[in-house]
Image (cartoon, one colour):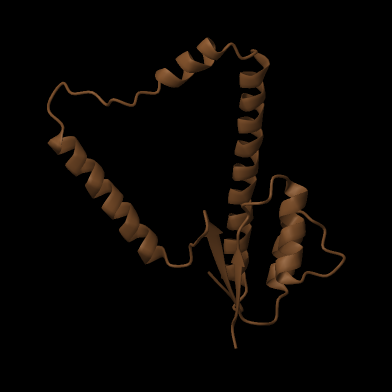
Length: 148
């Protein structure tokens, strides 16, 4: 019988949390090294059939066809909206209003700097999660017991 493991990294904000989560979900041994090489090694050592799915924003991302169909619907909706808009008509909700409101509220300059550093940290985690997915994909190609 195939075991299904759904991975949702939504609560992980550091590399350490990501590896602790992976260790728990896959039942890796105590000697798991909490790095990408150790992840690959432990995944390729799995002896049982495992279906790995990624959950994003609370949705199971196992089904590529459903994702592609949703993307196609969005693209068609955007095209229709552009067609229905008259030439010269502009969007009402522009991105310029929000910064104006922040200036008027009198917030300290430190808040935007903090937001920027948080955004940079989030981007680093997103990039690391891409690497984690690549490693999982490579391990699935190598191990006949892993399926994506």
